[in-house]
Length: 180
Image 1 (tube, rainbow, N blue to C red):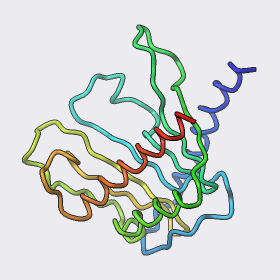
Image 2: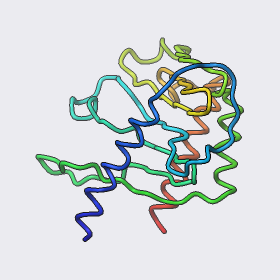
Image 3: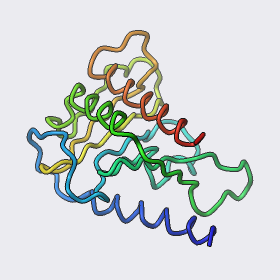
Image 4: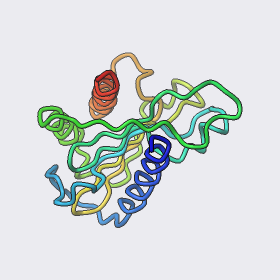
């Protein structure tokens, strides 16, 4: 039964991500949760940069937040070759307070009003740094914000500093959930 759970979880997350990639109508929105508890509300991860092929073609973002507060994150993977076929997905339930923190950061960043924003403020830092990418889904579609070389500058300006706080917050929540 344990191995079955490990196979079902990645399939569910992939299906949810595919369903969430629907329209991209743009416009402003709000950070209220959709009625479907399995709806993807937020994805966050890193794309591109000078990384090994197996990392560059990773099919899932680092974090997936569902409407009911479940946070799906990638757990540790054994350093073996060849690596495991399925990713080590960890699922934990965020508290109402933690959900409010995430929604507040989404509002502060301005994600509901963004439509494919690409921030290259740190472009003079590292030639092959990755993009930190967050996608917020609401009734108006998806709202994507990517920031090049996030976290490498000494004192980032908003919204980069707020995006960095969002990643740090999700990191903290995932670590807390993994230790429970």
